[in-house]
Image (cartoon, rainbow, N blue to C red; front, side, top):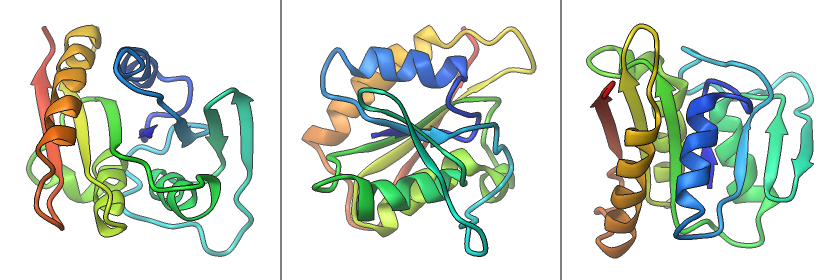
Length: 161
């Protein structure tokens, strides 16, 4: 499963999903609009809408954490083998990890006992996502072959090269 906090149409999400499709079936479940810096919030007081964009691609009116929670507990017949969140526009380091919806999505998957990682590209503008997508493909294979201990997720930050 792939998600993010930059929204269903973000270039980083599209690059990530395209590259991961080379090794596995990828289901994209992402916010219908940008939800950056929303942290680990869940939507509790209003309905959450899920819209199928096309086969294996869904837009959700909620937060990145909602996307993961709904996918694992409602949308999918079984838990995904891996949740990858990103590719985020801008790094998620230091105190940023407390605000990041990208990192929160990986954390939520881990709380639900699914291996996960968040991936971000550190830059202010002119983002180049393909090298990060290529790394994400390699790292996804690594995590699938060497699952982390329960309760551990990864937060990967890469330079904009």
